[in-house]
Length: 100
Image 1 (cartoon, rainbow, N blue to C red):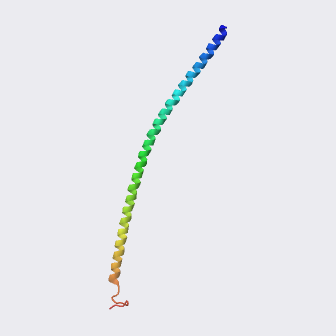
Image 2: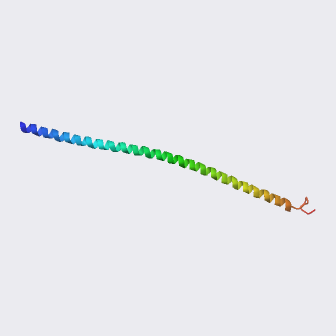
Image 3: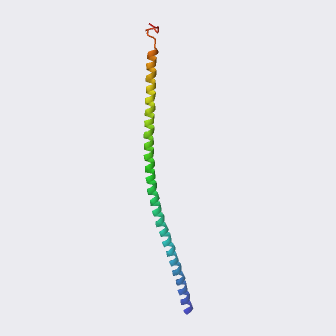
C-alpha cells in the first residue's frame, strides 16, 4: 500500500512540476506578446507620423509644380504677345496686303 501511495505522490509531483513549467512558459509567452504589442504600437505611431510627413511633402511638391506650371504659362503668354507685336509691326499697311 505504501508503494501505491509513493507512486501516486510521485505522479502528482511530476504533474505539478509539469504544470508549473507550463505556467512559466505561458508567462514568458505573455510577456513576449506584451513587448511585441508595445513595439507594434510604437511602429504604427512612427508610420503614421511618416505617412503624414510624406503627404505634407507631396502637397508641397504639388504646389511647387503648380507654381512652375504657372510660370511657364506666363512666359509662354509673354512670348505669344511679343510675337503678335512683331507681326503687327511687320504686317503690310494695306487692306489687301499691299504696302500703302
